[in-house]
Image 1 (cartoon, rainbow, N blue to C red):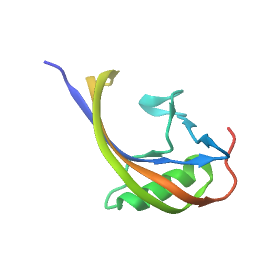
Image 2: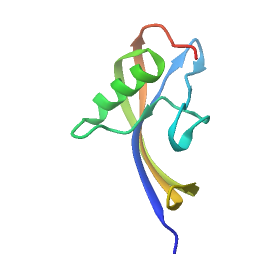
Image 3: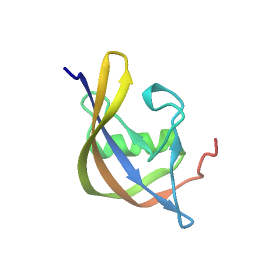
Image 4: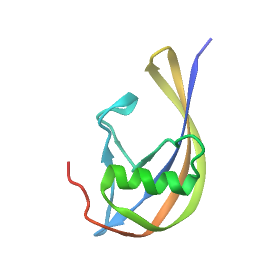
Length: 105
């Protein structure tokens, strides 16, 4: 029987100078993959607060305004620890106002 890992996170859709902002993950099961800026919630953290924190940590940008645009989930084969599959649940936000300098890594 397949063993599913469940991931839940918030992710921001940011456009800067007519380009989609993405990050290259540095560690964890998504290491070396490109992704929207975002990630998991800390215990007791609200969705939008997690978005603001994750975007700042990963990009250096400070979210000033964002609107939730959708929620989805998807599954895919995933060999990690004891799991065969991952079910990823994502809450997507369109970030319409932000400031700061984009970190270039």
